[in-house]
Length: 126
Image (cartoon, rainbow, N blue to C red; front, side, top):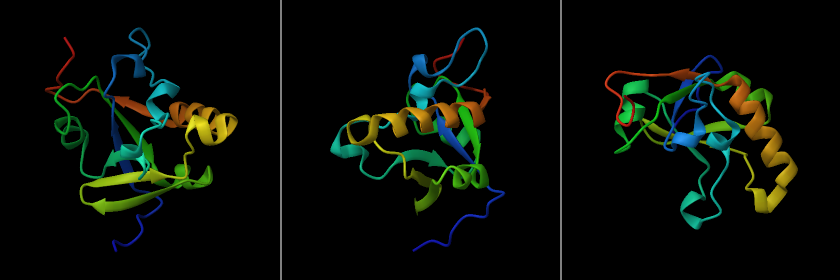
């Protein structure tokens, strides 16, 4: 078991889908924080502990990276659990099928907190 992350830690979430980022404003959209309804997504929302580049490298095509502050996640009743560094999961986000209102509210809050990062080189971007 890995020790809990400090509240001041920053984690990174890869923008795996083009529709997760507003192309005009470069703002992260709530869709980036919706959990898939598949068993493959049982652990939570994947994040990287190392860096934006490390996070982007985990995908064949990446449309950006969002940074999130662990302390702010905890203020929402969520946490980050490290499973195999540098990979971790944001836990506590329900699927739409489990609690639609809370899932949508949390996705919106996470999108507001997220900061878009465009590391170089980043696959999938011009």
